[in-house]
Length: 246
Image (tube, rainbow, N blue to C red; front, side):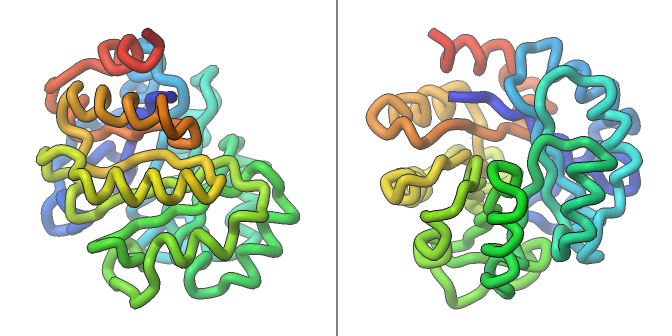
């Protein structure tokens, strides 16, 4: 299982939100590039980047900062937030240089387009499933749909998707741990044959251990994203890496 530290970008700064709420923001660094280098030095496998301004605007906004990060790092970088058209996909893959882009809102609202893009960019488009009570949330988490995460993912099992990033937004940034219902949802997605990356609520090394246990029986749970816990020093990326590589 891979460890993916998160860098959430807003106004060029490295921030964290609680439950995706833009009114509940903590700024952790005004130098996201240095932050990215720190996570790489601690053994991160992949860097997970979120363009929070982009998620709100519906187009990439912090891509200049992301480009600087990509140029400095040796590990792959993935980016989500506001990717709603092919122009944005091309910009991020070809000019900014991220390894893969994460599409969320557009995959729910425009499934035919998402399918077409996944075929055109095989192995480069991740499905971002942000859920509340197992239902998909969109538009930077401002809307909760009537579509279940499992139902949406099932439409795309035949595509060459490198990962589905599953976030329980009720847990995200709350430092309350990953609940069992969320773990069951992730395991169900993994059993569909999709590679799943866990996100939201990873608070302690026990959460990493629990997810790593699930990975042993459900190998398609391939990664875990961690954010606030590493910024607040609850554990170090190196410690999480040691657990999954043991």
